Image (cartoon, rainbow, N blue to C red):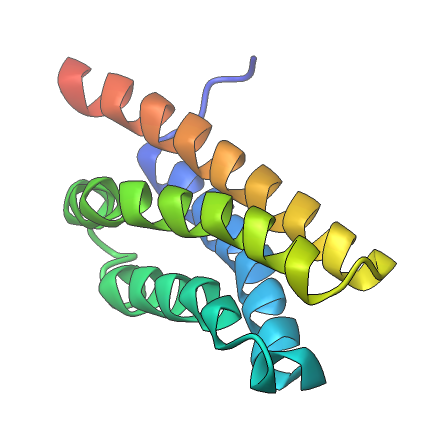
Length: 122
């Protein structure tokens, strides 16, 4: 695995957040959300994470401190979304949205672990 600097990890995390944001956008604007308001849980969780970290990109230590606070909530929301999405629709778009958000969270967890290692060494 390549070694990254903290600013590079912030950049990779922001790119991963962009994927989560696209899932948020898809769900927020899908017709099914009217009949399945529980789908909004993932919308809120992604928004909450984004708002918590978006202004902290210039300070990786603070950035990852806030990531650490919010990532567990996003993980829980993604797991709940996995269950709720299947109830709302079996369409490929929903299946792919579930895969995308779960993968995004997995990647975020890996990036946070790498950042924690670097921060512990500092």
